[in-house]
Image (cartoon, rainbow, N blue to C red; front, side, top):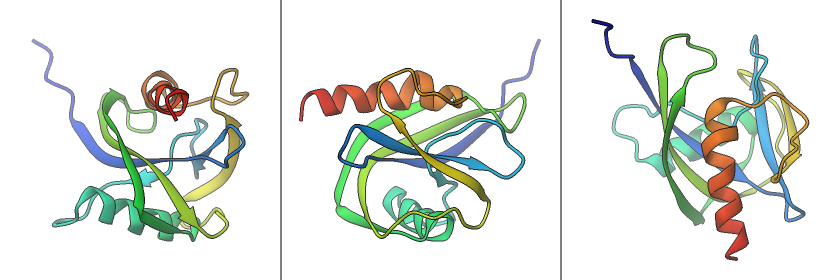
Amino acid sequence: MTPAAATIRIVAAVIDDGRGNVLVVRKHGATAFMQPGGKPEPGETPLQTLARELREELGVQLLADSAIALGQFSAWAVNEPGQRVQADVWWVRVEGVPLAQAEIAELIWIPLHPPHGVCLAALSEGHILPAARTLFATR
């Protein structure tokens, strides 16, 4: 019997530029791009986690009243073999200009609709961006 895969719980953000593009980031040592975000610290709510991660990794401030829950999604992790990642995902607005900081090696704006032009994590490509496209189609 194969042991169950460990699950990494994160909170992630979809940030758009108002022109049909969304922000994705690549961590140092990784090849795939993904939504910005990260792991909660003890006692943090999802939006507190997202505010902290966006400040630390991108130098921007989350505008909490803009947050719209996109859902909870799960996929195999790209940077931790044999583990799954489960993300609470929010569409948010931010204040400031995102800059790669901390563990982020690179950030880019990609089209919300494929082709995206970069290698994306399975969670982003198969779950988060399709949910964001559905939300944007109704707005």
